[in-house]
Image (cartoon, rainbow, N blue to C red):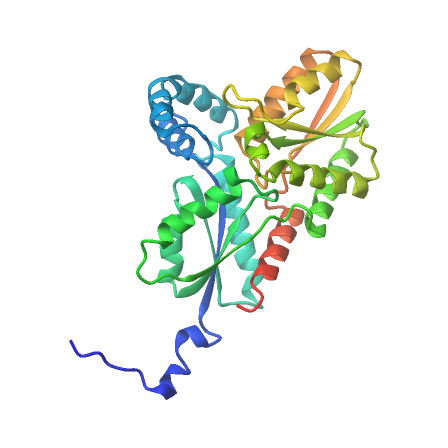
Amino acid sequence: MEIQKIPVADQKNSPAQTSTAKVGVLLINLGTPDGTDYWSMRRYLSEFLSDSRVIEAPKLLWQIILQGIVLTTRPNKSGEAYKEIWNTEKDESPLRTITRDQAEKLQKSLAKEHPNVVVDWGWRYGNPAVKGRIESLQAQGCDRILLFALYPQYSATTTATAYDKCFDALKVMRNQPAVRCVPFYHREPVYIDALAKSVEQGIAKLSWQPDVTIASFHGLPVEYYEKGDPYYDHCVETTDLLRTRLGLPEEKLKLCFQSLFGPKEWLKPYTQPTVEEMARNGVKNLVILTPGFSVDCVETLEEIDIGVREAFLENGGENFAFIPCLNAGQGGMDVIKDVTLRELQGWI
């Protein structure tokens, strides 16, 4: 077959070398089941819990346990939790609703000054998968793509798995786009400021003042941290910076960890037992925020705002308030846009 060569003069104006070439931005989050029924939950949990970065165990043994025991009962339990917070109007989880909103707002915000940037969103697990989103961005003319895992604090179980999914897609593409990965941003001033303002604004709406505020992060097995995962250190640094920004001492803004799974020891202190003990010891007014989550989801809306709220009140607490995640509000979008523009330098 004869190969037609592009004249040198025309090469200078090829799409990859002109200002009209498109650049993609892919916002990535955990993912969500398609529904709250048993089989939707089972498909989602099977993919999620089969990730060897999430569950570090001998694969064959773990699959026997997962497929035979865990996925027999857990889909129904998780489905009930999702039903508590499901967006019935759109028949989808809040994570899907809000992540889509984030992508649309970022696209609109960038459109005037950077019309060649195309923003999309996708999941580590479930639909829409990042593989299809990367292919879609490339089909729209994006020869460069910024992968943005929406996790301020890095962990191999979150940030790394998000990029793993992208690399799995890239390694089978014959014509790969160039890619960049957004690193952790747990100490960025724009992020700390947005968190602080969310706390200040949330408390200002209350008719009472908190005795204690808790920053609750998703948990991690201690073993993972001991092997070198920096997640715990990032959570501590975020909390320290937030304390400084709010002018609160350590006893007034406490760090805790939630969402435990399995028999291993996880990072401590655990959120719910801590809250229950506080209530029994006389803490009457409690505020909780979840800085490690960029978007409200089952872990924040059901586990914290419903489950931990009930535990606090049942043990003697009187007033409880949950500060929503940054989501697609002004503060949250300021963070996403600031980090995006920083990481796109040289491409736009």
